[in-house]
Image (cartoon, rainbow, N blue to C red):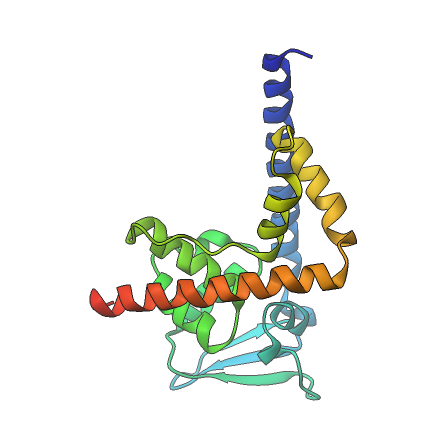
Length: 202
């Protein structure tokens, strides 16, 4: 296969994967946005506004929402505007663009409720829009992938497939090593970002 054909195939698979993600995300959002089977009620403090949600979605993203014997679970959200809560819920249900323009409030929400994925996305926005010279922290998978595939000649699609195939089989003791390194990276990163935000009155 020529280099141009290989590139075309890579582009084709990338487009197909993006289309699949969009299809399933849209359908999941539609299913999970149906409040008929909701088992969590989020009450925004200081207002009469309540949102019905699902513990399996919230608990997946944060242990704070995970444990409760109540059905439905009732959680009071303090210190945040209704618009922020809406943006966070829509993000957790698959609408990544819902937090656009609200990243500072969303970042604080992510910190308060220990939503790591949302925190990471908020930091990414800060990095892209405001901060130069601070290196984004890598995840455990990224550390492993760099060591595992360094020097290996492989196209992006094949690399993606190999990563998806091999990472679940990595022994726990190896995973723990990379998780500890990723955690140290995140601590370093958060300290740098905090100093930047304080210095620039965010």
